[in-house]
Amino acid sequence: MQLTFPELTNTPSASTLADPAAYRGLYAFHKYWGKKPAEPMRYLIQHLCPEGGLVVDPFLGSGISALEAVQLQRRFVGMDINPAAVRLTRMLVSPPPARAVDKALTQVSVLVKDAILESYTTAKQRAATHYVWRNGVIQIVWRTNGESRNRLELPPDEHDIALAESFASYQPKLLRAPRFFTNSRINSCASLTLKDLFTGRALRNIELLLAAIDGLPPAIQESLRLSLTAAVGQMSKMVFAITGRGRTTGVSSERMEVGSWVIGYWRPEQHFEVNVWGCFERRVQKLIKAIAESESVHFDSTSGTLSQVSGGDADHAILNGDCLALLPQLPDNSVDLVITDPPHGDRIPYLELSELWNVILGEEPPFEAEIVVSNAKERSKKSPGYNLAMLNFLEITSRKLRESGCLVLFFNARNEANWRFLNSFSASAKTSGMAYCGCFPLVYSAASVVQDNRDGALRTDFGLVFSRSATVGRSLADIPGWMFNLPTPKE
Image (cartoon, rainbow, N blue to C red):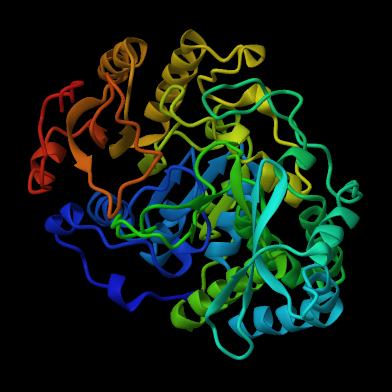
């Protein structure tokens, strides 16, 4: 079975890149860091890779390139050193039937829902939906007003306090200890533990969910485990309590609103503890809806090995590993399009930020092999090493591209070292026989805390296009904001 997206079946015009739609459906399922809009992926794949051709993304990330390439009937090879990225993409490209996920949710509900809700039960025998904590003390308890969806905001009573304290000493039994580093950029330190990030009650309930998921048939476990990774941030102490303004409107309001987990491991003095079952159930239901809305027998897309895909015997391969080790396994002159969004210097430390997801998945990522600049001194991930690795990536990529092939690199920079890298990357591309064709700004459907606009940074990300063909730049010149020169900090 393959998913079809009716709204994506027509070739998009260049103008759509200037007005991207908000993430929806499967694209909105998971909060993977640094997602790019789907429209430029779709446009570039359709214009720079023939149907049946081979698209490669060596820094796979959220998997949007994989979904677009498979949907557009291009062969695809995706790589990422982050196990969470690879497992998420594999599920999104080949999701289980919606009815199977719905049945699995029911099975998990039968096993653990009552036990989880009991841990939030108030003296009125109704489960609380949220607790507002400040400096380690519960201030407010939210629960629904009987059959009405309107919330009641109540001061905690002795029962609420005693119930929370009964789980305070809970120690994780199924989850491995996370590996964090001292990185002030994302507010992490080497001594950070799960108990710092979650209440004991939340950890206990997360592990109840994990145990129930592990008891399901293997074919359906992955979708629910990934749903748990997508929801786990809202189960933590990192959920801000927003006061004084509306969450989405910005208009002044006295009503307290629930924030969301933003980039990094910030634990505000005032935060929410959200009912774990509610978080999990809503996320699984969102996945069910996304699959159901897109389900259709369209065409078969078979997974295989890298060699099977490059040889035309399979449609896609999603590989976990270092792209510098995996890319050389592709035959030379076999790739039509490399389109990718590598880490931009120290802008997003992907593995460090994905550690909670990898803990839930039972994965231990190879931090040492990540191509990134990290502010964590103990990682020794500095600009010279990053630049050298990226130039190595360019040299390998240039050999794998066909004579008519293209490389599209999404890029941003916020310091002088990264700007020097962009100039050296462009010069090295020329040495490798690929000319710089031009670039265009990536317009987002909404502002994001990941879009780094500090001094020295671009106002947007840019898509940089390289190719051996001099005509490629002219063929893309209709893209809004297209320019033939390299971007500069003022762009």
